[in-house]
Amino acid sequence: MPFLALAAALGASLCWALGAILAHDPARKLGAFAFTRVQLIGASSFLILLVTATGQWINLDWRFTPAIAISIVSVLVGNLAMIGCLRRGGPRRNQLLLALAAPMAAGLGYLFLGEAISAPKLLGGAVVLCGVGLAIFYGAGRTGLEPLDGPIGQVVGLGILAAAAQAVALIALKPVLLAGVEPLAASALRTGGGAVIMILLGFWPSAAFRPLSTPTPRLVMAAMVPGFLGYVLAVSLLLYALRGSATGLATVLGSISPVLMLPMIWYIRGRCPPLPAWIGAGLVALGTGVIVLG
Image (cartoon, rainbow, N blue to C red; front, side):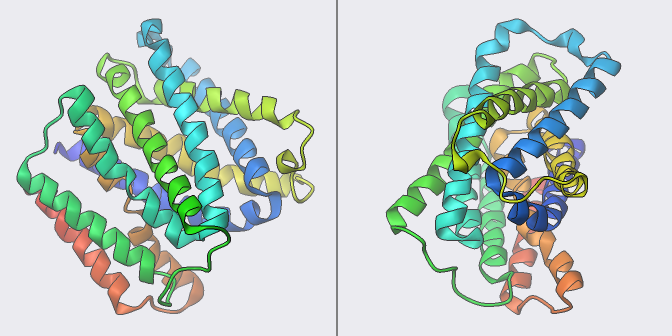
């Protein structure tokens, strides 16, 4: 795996980890829909201005409009399914199910893009996913998962749908990136498309689309900062990694944010996560080394 692609995938995970820490309070106050809408509008506006100012639209080939549309729809479906899974199954169960996006992306990459992954890299990816699972399960400092708020089948179904949608979105964009479109431009298109749809949904007269609290300037800014880290930096870095490596490997290394959150949680709460979580972190480091050297 090229070093720059590796660094980009790890950088994406770091941005998502920091963004998740910062997003907790504004997401709780605004509600899932209003929080996501604020993030998409702010991130897409910044990306569109940046791409326009740097002239990165020049390599955009409109023949890829269907692929970009598939990516936009997949992102929205994935976000809605993820929110449903999070509400009903809790954050750790949600993260565990979303980790399925990596093997799904690897399988779709093999079927539709002809991407083959060597046995050592496949083993390394499996070790990384095992480490991520341990970090998620034990990272909060206690064993067990959160109580269910609904049938387990519904929670699992929503989690699988969210993971599959993420994988499809990446597979749809891979040919676009290989054709020479800049990752920032691709990110601006899919984020901007998602923002337009979220704005239109906001006009629907339903309580589900209204914010839980009044969106003050301070609260909006608090929501936009993790949105910048996630939708601008993390997604763009992941797309760069996607262009330079196999889809499955980029997705695996882009999903280790639960491990990177361990020292952040330790710093914020002043309590060291338990040993199994750190063993998970060690497995992630080991698996990453196998991927690099394999």
